[in-house]
Length: 448
Image 1 (cartoon, rainbow, N blue to C red):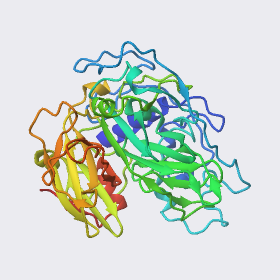
Image 2 (cartoon, rainbow, N blue to C red; image 1 turned 180 degrees about the vertical axis):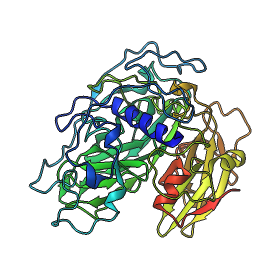
Image 3 (cartoon, rainbow, N blue to C red; image 1 turned 30 degrees about the vertical axis):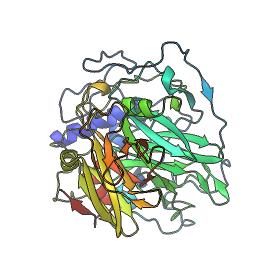
């Protein structure tokens, strides 16, 4: 009964994230069925409240929520907030192909990579949780609406770094963006607590992505608007449709506190709340979801018993190897040297970043910290790292033993002989155990 109640409440929650959509109206709780049974189904959904800690809670739309335990970081009061639009590389437009959203079992497609009966409707229709297609930015040191401990997603492409606040991503899940000549997609899945970035160029195609309204392994299922193939967020692979088998190029992205990002990137671009939609930005619609004793929403797989389903882990996937580092243990160690696919990596943890999935106000979430994963090599020299025991007012929270240089959580040397050197970032996932184990069942658990 508790699981049924959780499912019904969570479906209504997802439906409240929807905006107007031309394809369909909101699918209600009765429409939570496999993809093969939901094509063309549409029903109305109403808001509800769920006081249980085990289920997401739905608050009044656009509510103003007081933050009790956080402060806004030091923006420059002498600077006027600016508004920056970035020239976007659009997708190629809808092709004359069969839509996997409407006809997932069409005979013209190649063999699906997953069981279609396990792609479940989460409630909203395609783009009911609206992606951001025309992102508007402002300069970091003019931002006065993000609290110090709030998580942001940091993405660097061709030497440019941008921040995507999780308080926005949790309501939109996808941003189609462009760095210079590189079209990218930034994705965030609250239900599996994971953020990934991809290139949107696929050889002779450029695509844009939308939210399908469906879930696979309790993870966001995306679709590209050009062929309407469906893709898994967690590994960036088209699993059904015209492009089945196509894999996106993953880009290393990091979740860290706004304080850490601002300190290192005061003039970087930050995604603003000017999204074209009205949402309760700063409010967590999944209140109570970050509870290790509760079950993932609409996860129909068998949980790997090595860890609780919602244990926070750092997932690293390289070559044919996959490793899961238990976050709590990493936090105790501060720095961990480990091998993945035969390559030595340095994994760092820095306190000071709130979970976005616990309290009603994101900034009030407990401290889960931030993680960085790097190849420990700079200027042709192999390095070994440890946490700095000093104040690190310059953001140098880590130090290498070979030169004594200090490094910030983004892998940049901010002091010492190697100042200015950037370590090579390694793509990783801050996520829940059930999600990584479902997509990478042979993953190794590292619990130092």
